[in-house]
Length: 268
Image 1 (cartoon, helix red, strand yellow):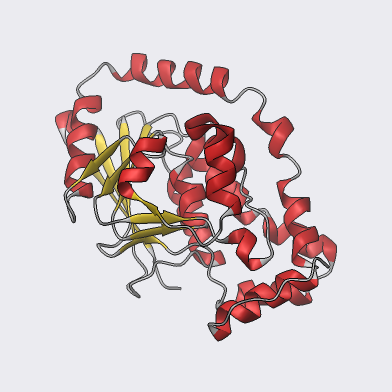
Image 2 (cartoon, rainbow, N blue to C red):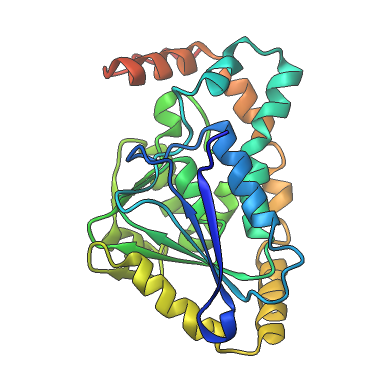
């Protein structure tokens, strides 16, 4: 099995910073089912780690992530699954973002290149995001006949409000530049190209120098207050996605994407 994720611990003040590097070595960092499993396992590996206060998640220099891997054989097999198996398989994404969202450590995303679809869902599950000035985000799911899932809609709503969330998700072809992402509140800092990781580490060192227990308890309190009702709004994500994946529009969206042509949606 190819390892897509590497973890380095013991960095920064008192060794309290860890770095999780997601790099498939292909220049796009797509989220295959196996990549989802490895990133979920990486987050869960910190559950009993009292020596780490901050975790920096970074992709490759050219891409944070291109989102779900539509060309992956396991992912493509979804079209032949019955509804029960499909629902179980579709839980890989929400399981990933939940694992990162629930981490006790402060999490910081270093975003260079592009951050698309599932990459955005993962990024908004983190506590902070630092973005290179030449990077961009995009949420293409609706343009592929799908819905934006992985419980990301409530998280985006908390960050950027209703209108911007609709704009980001519904206008599927719209690129969100780093400056727009900062203006909207999707990211907390924009830095020179190629410097996102360095800036994320600078922020991590500031957090790591604070009392670890107070930081962890504050994060938990803020998250519980801010996200108390999120499950009510997003528990149906998997079923919505499963339903959308059975439509002709989804089949057309994926085929058009793979063929590099404009899709023709018919609402069925």
